[in-house]
Image (cartoon, one colour):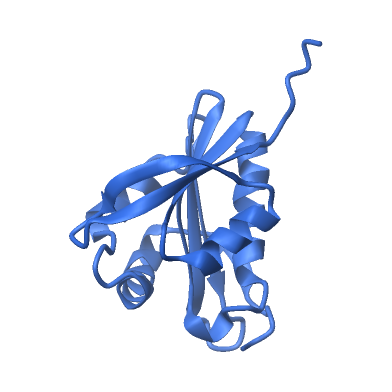
Length: 163
């Protein structure tokens, strides 16, 4: 396990290939395509941005060791993806990435954040629970081609101030 020493920065188009390498290493059966990342990044900049994508870069090697993405629509945000190299598991990098996404959910003025996580990914589920996410349901056969169910989790990020 490596202590968190990575530097977070906005993901850009030139990060897609190294992120794809990590994506295929971590999620070989249901990895995103380059086109999916291109589509997401197309909505990540400018005054009408609705996405936040971030990478974690090792400051010594320059290698990307983690990444995460968030989509916002109205007052609802959705964690699209989080991935961390196995060598950095348990070192706090996943928490740093999620913290970044949640800060941006607040900046997007979202009241809730949803996410889906594989039912067999207990490591990720525990991370989300530490941040206050609560299970609210399942999506049967969500992850393809393995037909793996997803646990849907929700976090309230800002309270309604109309009391």
